[in-house]
Amino acid sequence: QVQLVESGGGLVQPGGSLRLSCVASGDVFFVGWYRQAPGKERELIATINAWHRKSYIDDVKDRFAVSRDDAKHTTYLQMNVLEPEGTAVYYCQANSTWGRGTQVTVSS
Image (cartoon, rainbow, N blue to C red; front, side, top):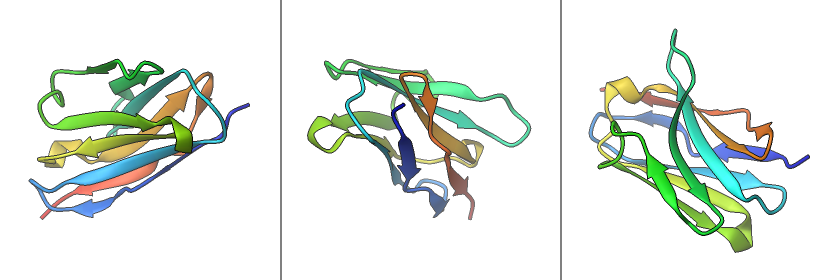
């Protein structure tokens, strides 16, 4: 099984930015980024495949950017103009494996 480790979360002010990383133990074809806010269901927010084709939900389309560095087995989620509503645990998924998540808290 591929292993995934997220990092880059933390406390950030509204309007600020964070870059999350998802490091895989091997090659992955498709990576999805998800978030789960307190009391809410986990939702898919961005995807990227091996050809670097990307998708986003409307809520983050103009603020977030997903990218890959395949030589490093790493997928990134650049998050700009963060809002308090973005407070959540952020996860990456590849193949049939989930990472453990990284906490993002957006607060002044």
